[in-house]
Image 1 (cartoon, rainbow, N blue to C red):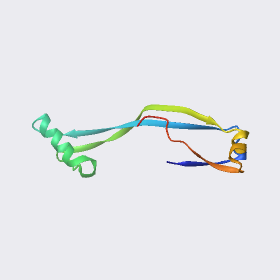
Image 2 (image 1 turned 135 degrees about the horizontal axis):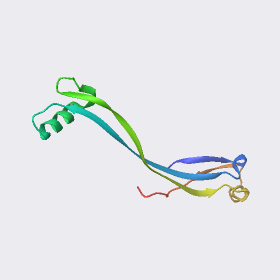
Image 3 (image 1 turned 90 degrees about the vertical axis):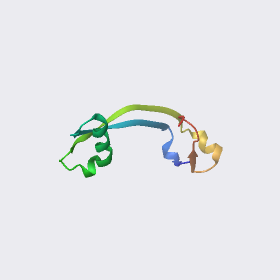
Image 4 (image 1 turned 90 degrees about the horizontal axis):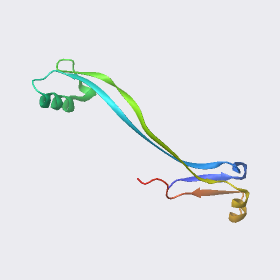
Length: 98
């Protein structure tokens, strides 16, 4: 579990939990006798070994699939009264389902 160091200068700020989901689309050109053979060549050679004889790596594109932002709490003066320190560590266990 991660911790944030909270100081009095942070009063008024909010703590957010942010989760993003991305996916990558890779493009290949493959010469083969069948779709199964083309797929096998692609999986066996991937971008680091594409030789240009039977497979060409055409590049990739990242896509942002989803972003979720959830406000967890606000930092308040009475947080410091509760903990009795000039600073404290904020721990949060929860938020999004994995």
